[in-house]
Image (cartoon, rainbow, N blue to C red; front, side, top):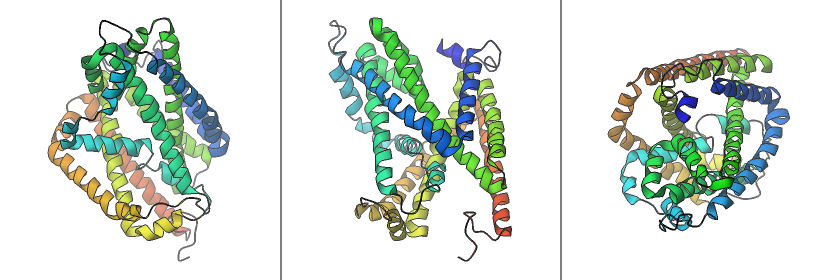
Length: 387
């Protein structure tokens, strides 16, 4: 079912009127556009104010059910909730020697906290100077990790271990996040008996809300970018973003064989480039803007203060750490990653898309710079040059 629904068997099978996936995709696109067209306060904020609590309730329902499973099969007493939690929390130190582990971890946290691809920078631009960004940042990151690790991790890994055992869970984890979430968990829910279908509905509804809250937050920076760089109004920026989204989504729906297209985009954009850009941001904050100046700006209006040790971490520890991980990845894994990105038509097309979109963004940025300078503005588009 998963292979048929995602078109993993062959390219082009999803672009048919009879494909339920096509209609679900169009519905998701429509929801995104409606929410972002209504703006930050009228669309995104109102939706998230409802979606986030509902998502938390759904996660708690599923987590409680998983943690109360005990040992469902007395014939295999080792497949218990306690051992499932141990599988998740007991580290495998041998993985620390693999640079791809560190890159994946850094890329995941950067992606999860929206660092490295403009989202935080965009939404920060709507704040007032005296808004408390320190406490807000702490609350956002803590809540995010509660959902991601405390809910998502303990639900998926623990439930998989209880019903599939060590070998089955290890195999499921090796398929990646999508395989674990959409291949393995339905099997787990099927083992839960009468309540399994209900728990599955709650789980996938939660994932849908999580995806939608993420996608609308990602679309808004693109719209703001086109509005400010090209000087167009919001409807035109939404239309431009929609056109690009439909084109990219259409390619994703066509090149589905083996998931090569979207997995290539996910790695190079969602892990590698986010890692690189976030590293640049750290260096700019610590060395160009200045860590002392940056922390002073952060503390404006804050009710708590960032510990002094983070001056050292931001300026020295983080850049060195990120640099070492990047160099180690290039030595150990870059060749294999590039080879995998050229192995199939879908993967090669994804690399072409990345290059073309990068060129488009550079051209639009250059157009915006010229427009701002011609209007006597600095690069934030607001203040006169020299002020």
